[in-house]
Image 1 (cartoon, one colour):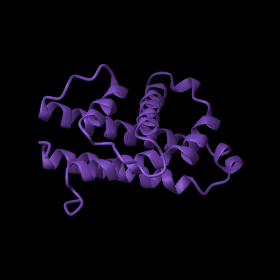
Image 2 (cartoon, helix red, strand yellow; image 1 turned 135 degrees about the horizontal axis):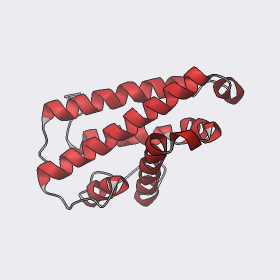
Image 3 (cartoon, rainbow, N blue to C red; image 1 turned 60 degrees about the vertical axis):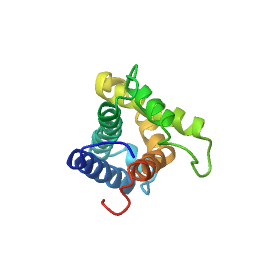
Amino acid sequence: MPRYNEDKIATLISEMKKAFERLNSFRSIKRDDFLGNLDKIDSAKYNFIVAIESAIDICNHIISKNNYRMPKNFGDTFKVLHEQGAFSNIKGMSDKDFIKNLISMAKFRNRLVHIYWEINEELLYDYLQNNLVDLKIFLDKISQFLNLKDKI
């Protein structure tokens, strides 16, 4: 089993879950209603940053604690943990597609943080509808990888 600091992982997972729940609450909002509400758009942007950043931080922490290979960038952190068996047997998609989705999320996070003025709100809404499930799968797989099912 991989080594990790329980308090740090618990905090990161808790923050990720809170952000995920907030984002998930927006999924039922119709496109036009969401796109017409700047507060919801801003909240979704912020919570995507928190959720994705938490996922990256979880991976980096596990990588560091276990001396896994150094990731080349944020997206590569997911590849490193996949190489260690963290993300396998994803129901309904191939492992390769799942990792590709996580890398896409890391790129989306970079856009939200570094070129926030160019974020297309339609794309944001599409991420809510189509990519949020990847964060849930990430949480489930990390919990399995770290054997956390009964701890969190």
